[in-house]
Length: 398
Image 1 (cartoon, one colour):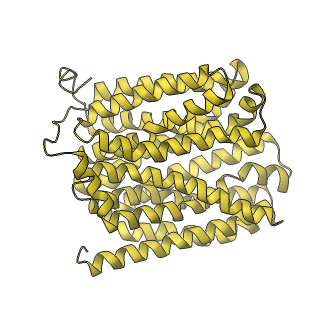
Image 2 (cartoon, rainbow, N blue to C red):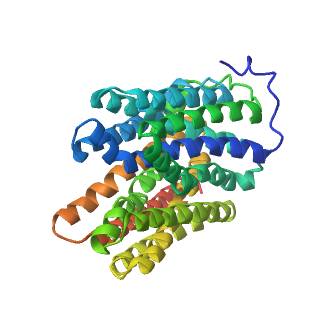
Image 3 (cartoon, rainbow, N blue to C red):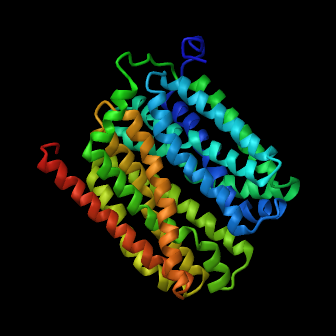
C-alpha cells in the first residue's frame, strides 16, 4: 500500500483530527504494553510457567522496540509517512492477534517480540507527522497530544483490557489491541493528508544520526532520566499491597492516579516546551529528582500520601515530549531515525530503572526505597541534559 494508491482518500479536516488519529495508535500501543504487565499472572498460569519466566514475554516486547525502532526507521526512509504509519499499525494488529492465538509460551514470547517491532517507529513517524500539521511554535504541544494516547491507555485502556480478560479470558485483551490497531490504520488513512515522499531520503542519510553527538546525548538523557520514573512505577502495586496492606482495588486506583498524572504533565510540559524548551527539560528532571527523594516518606505514610507522591513524580513523564522535540531540532536530515530511537531509549529506561531498584530491594530495603533509585537516575538525566547544552554551545549549535 502506498500513498499513491491512497491518494483518493479525503484529507484531514483539521490538525486536531490528525492528532487524534495518531493518538489512537498510541492508545493501542500503550494498552498492550502496560496491560501485559497486569495480565502476567494469567498467561503464566495458562502456559504453566513461573511469573519470573513469564516476564520474559514482557522483556521480549521491549527488545522488539529497541530492535525495531532503528531498523524500521532506516528501512522505511523513502516511504511516504502516511503509508508507513498504516503499514506499521497493520503489522501491530497482526502480531498482537498472533499473541492471542499463540499455542505455547515460546510462540507467545516470539509474537510479543514481533509486536514490539513497530512501536518505536510508529511513535517516531507520528511525532514528525504531528509536527508537520501545526505551526513550528506548537510542535511540542502536537507531540504531547500524540503521546497522550499512550498516557490515557494507562488510565482507560489497561483497566478495560483487564476487565475484558476477567470476563472472556486474557487472550481477548490482545484481540482488543488488534482491533484498536486496525481502527488506527483506518483513522490515519481517512484523516491524515498524503504528503510527497522525500526523493532525497535514503537509509544512509538516516544513519547520519548515529554520527551526531547531540542526538546521542539527548537519547542518553531520556534513557537515564526517565529510568527514574520506571524505578518507582514498576513497584507501585507491590508498595500498595506489601508496604501499606492495600487491596487490589487500591492498586488499580493508584495506577489510575499515575496515568492521570502522566497525561496532565505531558500536556503541561508540551505547552511549556513550545515557549521554553530547555527550561521545561530542567523543570521536569529537576522537580522529578526532588519529588522522587520525597516519595519514600510519602509511600510509607499511607495510601493518600502515596497517591499524592505518585501523581507528583509524573512530572518526570513530561520529559518524553520535551526530548522528542529537541531531537527534531538537532537531528538535521536524519529525522525519522532519531525520532524512532527516542522510543528505543525510553525502553532502555524501562529496563534500567526497575533493574537498579531491584538491587536495592534485594539488599533488604522496602519498596518505597525505589524512590531513592529513581531520584539518582533523574538527577543523572539532569546532568546529562546540562552536558548536552554545554556541548551544543561549545559547538556553536545554540
